[in-house]
Image 1 (tube, rainbow, N blue to C red):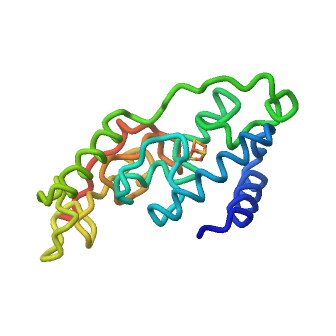
Image 2: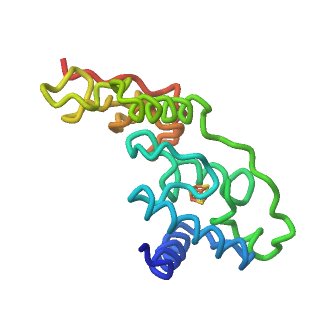
Length: 181
Ligand code: SF4
């Protein structure tokens, strides 16, 4: 069973380290921590409690809390999609909390759900990630695609390019498949 106190403390520390605050609504905060604990137990990682997860980590990597969309959402709306992380303005006036539009590309969720359906039906996964026979060009040792930010050179292995480069903040369209050759 996931340790809810540990998740809460980890969340508070992460908020503090990044200049954010945790949700000022105590009931909502408790629900979100409960959701993260449930997902840790279910999937083995803390997938976002407000989104649909595939249960396949390589497809959910962008929504493991804190997700890749948090910083952009707090900057634009004062809070993340769930409201777990908030700005100082929202902390001081929780009445300003409002729904945050989904920033995650629908293709990311669709790709995960498609892979999950195929895995459950016994079909071959749509990506080469189950193949361990050899490393393909542009993939890591598990066959997961490697993406390169053309602005700063940041590399990451994941099914889809990240929505925002964590280093230079370039958008997803600035990523290209990386090739070793
Ligand atoms: S939206 Fe908030 S709670 Fe959900 S994963 Fe992102 S940071 Fe965590």
